[in-house]
Image 1 (cartoon, one colour):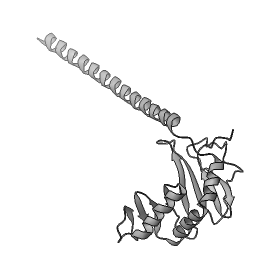
Image 2: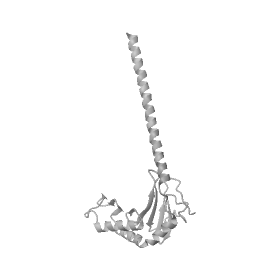
Image 3: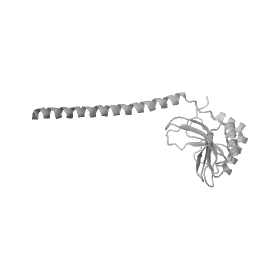
Image 4: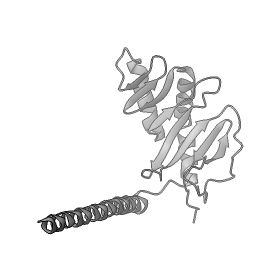
Length: 201
């Protein structure tokens, strides 16, 4: 009888060990599948996403819509309580609000004016800093997924940045933690990017 129980428990221990091994294999396969899926999606985005605009086109767009850029700058500098504005809505500081605004949250006419100007300049988002140097910024182009996000912005800076380049073309951010670079346009206007601008051929 004792030998029978010993055999039974020995078999149970073997089955339990086998189940644990199968669980470990399944978990490893699931993790590998997640990483492969993420890599595949990033690859698709990299090869399918539209390339960033050339620098010459960016400058042409800025010059053609200079008046609208200046209006956006003036509005952002004036609206000290505004943090961000886009087609999805606004974000304010005090009181904090995030979403599509009612007339109690933000003047409807002014919000609509922001959207009209953003559409005119080809921007999707605009924001400002808090304090003495609001540095109004307009997002012109963005692409990527997860950690591989790249952007091109046009901003008005009260003080000249130190990380300037003579041209955006050929610039490549080698690190996802890159602070990006600035390209001077004129006066206090600058391009900023953390991505890659193809060189003109």
